Every structure is written in structure tokens, then in C-alpha cells.
Length: 194
Image (cartoon, rainbow, N blue to C red; front, side, top):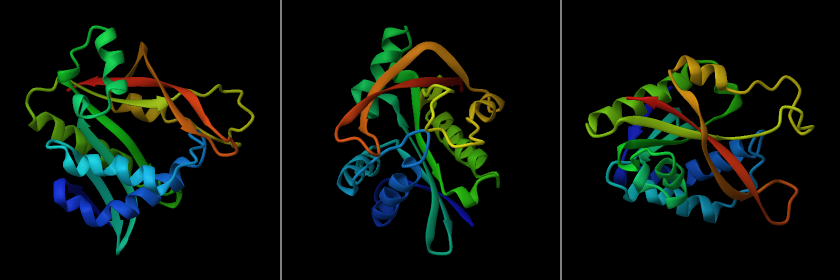
């Protein structure tokens, strides 16, 4: 397996595979995302155009089995930065780690750590960022849609030095599987001082 850090034009050839991977992985719990290739292509194209953005890709032979994104917070959508400003953080000093997606059969092999290692190193090279941050959907523990044996990633993130910043929450809409329209989802931010 190869772990590759891609930027700018390097992303062009892999964008379709990344779009399919995001849809496939996020369709499962806890996101239950019913995405479209058109939306995904538009979303991912922003990473190839952003100056400091990075996408970490895991490839086995010719197949992309995982990916993780990172960009300065202000290079992402305004909805991502607003909660930081509201909580007294300077959004210019935050590097945002978007999603990490990995096919289930490749989990437990240290690739989650590789995603964070590469992104944190990239953010530190920028020199002006004080925090790394990402957000995760908030679901009730008693939600009957949760699969048996599901374990949230809180312990993994805590071991990596991230903590839930109480009150640092954004709300994002997306269409869930089985729904006809977008549903608003609370997203809890986790942060770490770089």
C-alpha cells in the first residue's frame, strides 16, 4: 500500500475515485449520507484549486482505498469558520482536517494515524497555524440505526491529542439515506494545538 500526499493538479486524475469512495464510506453509520457524484466532484475540486490544501490518498495497486483532506479553515466554507470566530478563536490560525474515509477492510492497519501524521506535518509547515481541527456528526447513543458493535472514534482521537471543545458546534445539512430532503446535522469540533 502507498500513502500519498497530493496537492493541486496532482489531484485531477484521482478525483472521480475519491468522489465514489466518499459516497461509499459516508453511506454507513454514523453519517448515512446519500450523496451524488456531481456534488462530490464539485466539493473535491476545491481542494485541487486551494493553495495550501492537501489530500492524503491510500492506494493499493491501482485502487484508492482511503483518503483524508486538509485545508486552512478560511479556505473552506464560511459555515466551517463561523463557530470558531463565535468562540473567540482566530479562524486564520486553524487548519481544518476534513474527512477521513477508509474502506472497512483496510481499517485497523495504522492508516488513520498516517492520515493525521501527514496532515499535522503539512499544517505545521505552514508556520502560522495554531490549531488543527475537525468535526464529527453528533448522534444519540440510543439511535436504533446504529449497527451492533459500533464504536465511535473518540478514544482514537483523544490518543492523538484532540479534545472535544464544548460549544464548538456547527450545523450542516445533507440528505440521509431513506430521506427525500436534506436533514440538519450537529457537528462537534475536535481541536488540537499544533
